[in-house]
Image (cartoon, rainbow, N blue to C red; front, top):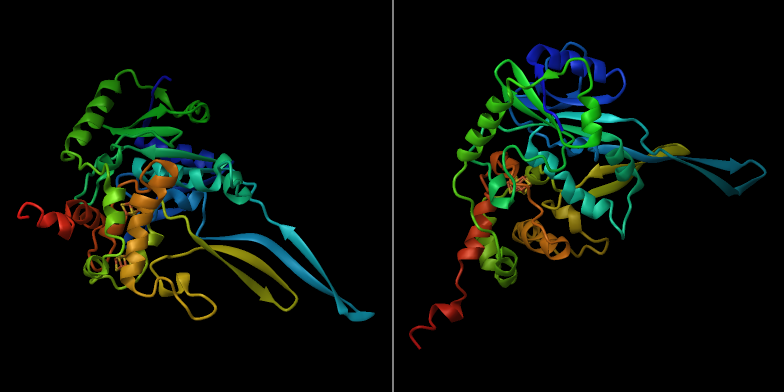
Length: 355
Ligand code: SF4
Ligand code: SF4
């Protein structure tokens, strides 16, 4: 597919035009952070840094209404109640602009759970099919980035419809899918013939900024070998304050809770992001909690990404974005935990040379 060039100024005009037909989510400053917000006409998106919230918001919103309901009492027989239920399947089309390749790739972790042979979540599938991702190649490699450790790189196109590569004066736009190619038919896109080499140089330069990748092969077995070692998990979770920032900001965390918000005889059923680092997440009605301490909860979070999900789906459920490390108020580092498990030698083996 032929690459195109779009200037910086035309990028805002392009989003203005897109917003007339679609919901456009683009990174904006919100006080001190950059996060996804609906595009406002004429407002320049912030495309030179990674938004603090992941792009999953476009397909799996923080809050969404699943259905609305209404109870009607039969005035002739007050023991009889009729319930009317109205499903609210999302219909709108959306374009998520400005995510980094790691965040967009995170959507593939969702796909294997919510759109697979066993489960087809209609709300997720409807949004997924109606949402396009225009991703920006990374040019700011941070100390918390490790996409290359988990099989990706700063210009990865997996999960994207279009990849924008920053070059002088604008972006070289590469269509990844047929739907992405359609987007690039807009009049703002010109020939990229003179910019193609520069774009290639940008991609290679940023890949070269990352250190040698760490090898996570076999980490699932190593983590499971430490499953019952609560001394290890207590030590790893000592600094954690159970705030949940790591899960809320993670592009691959897909757990949700369902609540009813009702007034009088009518209401709505809501789906909301949930957080496995909270005590309430597994608290049962009886009062029993199978994950009673933060050590149990951190073990579950790390193992889910690097052991359980890979066993079920064959890939690590972490895209290496580093959000959980960067935003953790206690500096808990998921990379360090997995490496600690990988480097661990069971006690029996430690003394085996002496016997
Ligand atoms: S962000 Fe850090 S402190 Fe907060 S729950 Fe996650 S690991 Fe714990
Ligand atoms: S676990 Fe951390 S590094 Fe991995 S995808 Fe989630 S937020 Fe990013």
